[in-house]
Amino acid sequence: MMNMAARKYIWMVIIWWSAVQAGGAVELLERRVDLVFKNTPIRDALQVVAQRAGFEWSYNAGIIDASRKANLIANDWTVREALYEILGEGYEFKPNGNYLILKKRRKPAEQLSGYVKDPVTGQRLANATVYDRQTLRATTTDSNGYYELKVRKKTEVVVARLDYRDTIFTVSSQTPRFQKIDLKVNTVTPVRRTMTLEESLQIAATKAERFFKATLEKWNAVNVADSLHRRYQVSFLPVLGTNHTLSAKVVNDWSFNVLAGTSLANRRLEIAGLANFTRKEVQGVQIAGIFNELHGNQNGVQVGGIYNHCGDTLAGMQIAGIVNFNRHAEGVASQIGGIGNHTRSGKMLLQVGGIYNFVPEVEGSQIAGIVNRADTITGIQVAGIVNHAKKVRGLQIGLINSAKEVEGLQIGLINRSGRRVTPFFNW
Image (cartoon, rainbow, N blue to C red):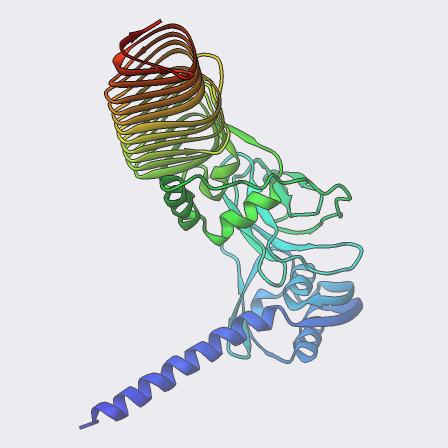
């Protein structure tokens, strides 16, 4: 019987040979050829292609129309391009080692395929995004500039790449399934804003968002400049949903995410079992079992089981089981956190924190279990232990109240106003 070492060796050889065959299969259709045909019989043309590209044919002669002639001038074309031009779309090719199997296509192709290139340099462009504008199915070109995309019978297809102008074309039942697309260089370079990381929980949320970004989404994010709009999104995880790999470029009215979802903006309602990642704006309501990570403005309500973050302007409400972070607050901005709330700048109407609150200005109420901190209070500040503000116009209630200037009343065991310190009351 064959021993274990021999079996292992044979399996290694089989795996190696399979890899070699697979590598050759990809390489064969991408081999470059120069061709000139003028009324050349199609079988002769196919033989010339095989000779120039260094492979052998395998096909039934009966599937080729011997009366057809080939007329073609090709300079540095791939084998795939040349064959589509010579044979048309009624055939399919399957490489097998150094053989190319040619078969008659049984039914019309349900996908587009082709190459994306720079018309000036002739370079085939890798990592270009090709997507269906209706279904948002998307793909990126490979290292040879080749793409394959499943499309509807009638739709619009967009081709986009960083530093190039978008190309849009309409697809119908009469549209050739093989499309060679030229992208022109965009002379206007977009300016991108560098985003800073928040402290602690924001760092964790940012890392989680990066974890969900697959290679396709990264390229789509830089290639597709325009925002898209959909009435609804249903997803399991970011990029695994109805908006596919273009999720981060879509504004949704309604978004339902089983575990987590990504979007450019949300207008009415977004719900996630774990987390929501939003790039631009939230209007309406956003609810997540763990956290909401918003890089832009919020004009609605965020509810997070643990954490909420608004990276720009908060003009709505944040409610979190643990903590809320916000860069700037204005209007009727409010925060309610099980542990605390932190706002870097602006004016807050209401802050309620189980332990602490911080905001530069309050025009309303600031209530905390342990400590409140603000520059200016116009209204009421209540803390279980310490209230601190530079200027108070209204009421401070706490064990210790501290302010540089008071126009109102302090109630606590120790009350400080400027250099003045009094017990129980200060006005």
